[in-house]
Amino acid sequence: GAVVSQHPSRVICKSGTSVKIECRSLDFQATTMFWYRQFPKKSLMLMATSNEGSKATYEQGVEKDKFLINHASLTLSTLTVTSAHPEDSSFYICSAPTSGPSNEQFFGPGTRLTVL
Amino acid sequence: SQQGEEDPQALSIQEGENATMNCSYKTSINNLQWYRQNSGRGLVHLILIRSNEREKHSGRLRVTLDTSKKSSSLLITASRAADTASYFCATGRNQAGTALIFGKGTTLSVSS
Image 1 (tube, each protein chain N blue to C red):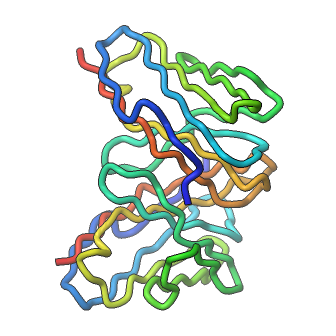
Image 2 (cartoon, each protein chain N blue to C red; image 1 turned 90 degrees about the vertical axis):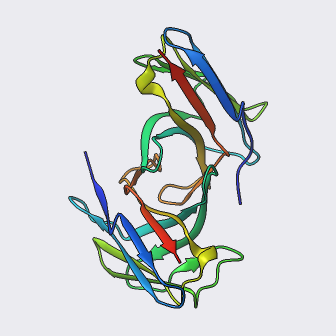
């Protein structure tokens, strides 16, 4: 089946630095991808919708200047956490919808971000 | 935003027992999906049930949907230690290609 990859799987950075996370659809094209954040023992919260060729759509309460999203091609979306702080430490997961009407999604394996 | 509640939040059972998890949602849907997440990993799609279906089976999984009550249940029969994971229900915004809204999840522990 279709696969979505994320890179890196884990990243540890110092406070104030920026971190880029990549989400790739490996054998299908995705004009739309979604970014979620998941805190420990919590559910996934939608952060933004990444649209190929246009601006991302952010959920209420998500700072677009802090979480920069670029959907550079039909197989790649990137999330950059700018000036990261410890409270940004979280598990970031991307997904891409399958073709067809069901809205089933393929999820990446996630990226664990730890900001010191 | 989150779609609704799942209960129980945590469930501990012995191998061989059945596990039932429930999910409620708030908005109208055209389908509801269940996903599984092993600790620190991504999500794996388990099963999708459409709004015009009441029950669906896949291997040891049985999902029911009651649109009048806006609720769904996931039953795992003859559980195994490998079923230990978190389980989430998710609904879309009634349109293909839109983001999923997840419930809070049930953490299942199956001990051998």
